[in-house]
Amino acid sequence: MAFTMTTFALSAPKTLAAAPTVRAAAAPEAARPSALAARSATAARSTKLMSSRRAVVGHTAAKRMQVRAASSPDMGGTDDGNVTILGSSEQWEECLAAAGDKLVVLDISTKTCGPCKMVYPHFVQLSKDNEDIVFLKLFGEVTQDTRDLMKSWGVRQVPQFHFWRNKEKVDELVGSDPKKLAAKVAEVAGK
Image 1 (cartoon, helix red, strand yellow):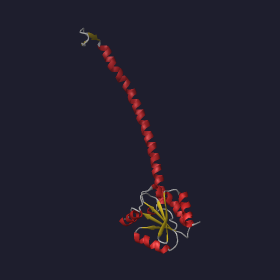
Image 2 (tube, rainbow, N blue to C red):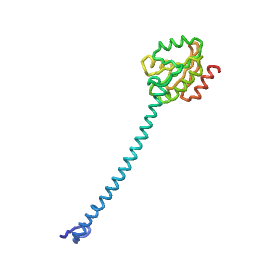
Image 3 (tube, rainbow, N blue to C red):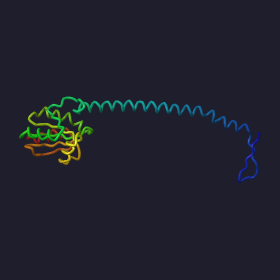
Image 4 (cartoon, rainbow, N blue to C red):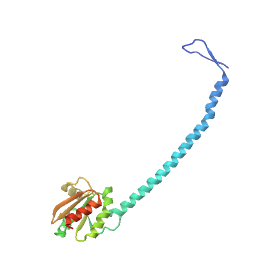
């Protein structure tokens, strides 16, 4: 069986043999299994890589949960030391009045703040090391009352540490650097 093909450039018909057409069609068929095998191998490597990434991500998520549990008092974390957790402006006023002329260090944070969770164990250790200082923690987004407190103090970023004495704010520190926090507590306390 012969095929004729006309082109625009030439008007003479060209004859093509049937066998080469069949072979040409057969050659891609023969090549396909190796292409499919290559794609399958690539997919298998990709799946293996994704599985290992999921394992790493799962491990990272587990670590985050450990950090969160260890550093967040609302999640059944570790010892809070001498830190009092505040939940309202009334509690804040009572603690401030009860402190008298003692230095009060207030940790203002939110429950979703990663740096707040990372610095909290250091804050707890400071409360254990300085029993003559009152340490308080306020989660700013818990209630409308605590949000109003944060707004009245002009808190725009957390963690933020306020230092109070005799019901007056004497200093503040913004950030989660434990060394700066320890230095600021020592500076304001006069140690």
